[in-house]
Image (tube, rainbow, N blue to C red; front, side, top):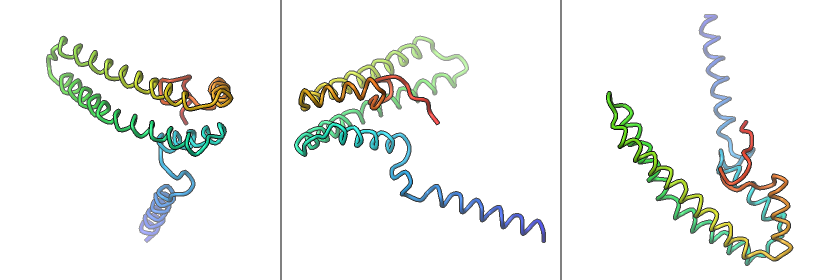
Length: 155
């Protein structure tokens, strides 16, 4: 009887914990995407963008995100191919090296595309907004995507 009661209490605690984590509200969106969206919204508010600027910047982001999706898929395919080769008893070193270089090329292309987008976005800003953006970035207010600035410590 005591074991049954303990099991029921443990199950209830687990269900409550899972339910609490699944509730929207405290974080809205989840994970990196949510944090990045919150950070971008905060940056846009601090820059005091006009509606036209916000619309243009969102259009650039959407275009960039759509374009990067295929590159991300290709990177995932290359990583899977590398894993497959590394599972072999005697992997072909040249094939692995070729795939590693391909992955690096794809990541470099993504970063270059991201920087090109950021440059296009900066063209939409006034001089005062550009100065404010540079100041915010130098203080760590917005680093962009992973690899575009100093790394933040993960929780």
